[in-house]
Image (cartoon, rainbow over all chains, first blue to last red; front, side, top):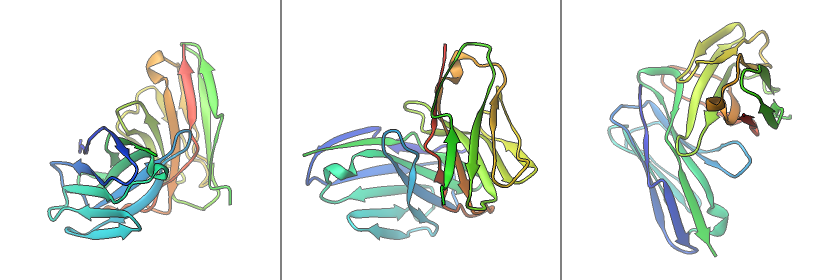
Length: 112
Length: 116
């Protein structure tokens, strides 16, 4: 079974601060996705990274896929209260054909 | 398009009762899946389907059955509910799922199930 470890599990910061969420595994993934989930709703895709070393930017969010395709990070610059939510990484490929493996999630709270 | 719809939104069952969680999508997606979400454990895959008539087990399939008679519908059946099945259940669909790539998963709004 492939595992994805996310850290930290909880993050509480003030508006304007920067933060980084990590997603690590001992397994290689063919692609990795980041989702954001708000209370009472299903997760919504933010980005998919597929190439080792790839960096993608989505406004104030920067996503990076590790060179060995075993890890990924999500960096948020100047966090805003609207960024509050649960962030989930999910990996596909390798030995988990047909299955998407999710990390445990990071609950982010941004205080005004 | 309605996207992925799930019913009911909330459900309370007694131990031993059975029920079916409904999931439907109108995007003509081949791949559909069921997850359960518990605090601190992210999303765990219960069952998935790569097309009508084809289903397979995920990470935590025990106590659940699925079938996929049409592209649109993917119901999840709880055979004999147990308190350990108290969770939030999400259905998801995507265009496809290849060996090396995951397409965007579209999630339904979830069903919150409590088993007493």
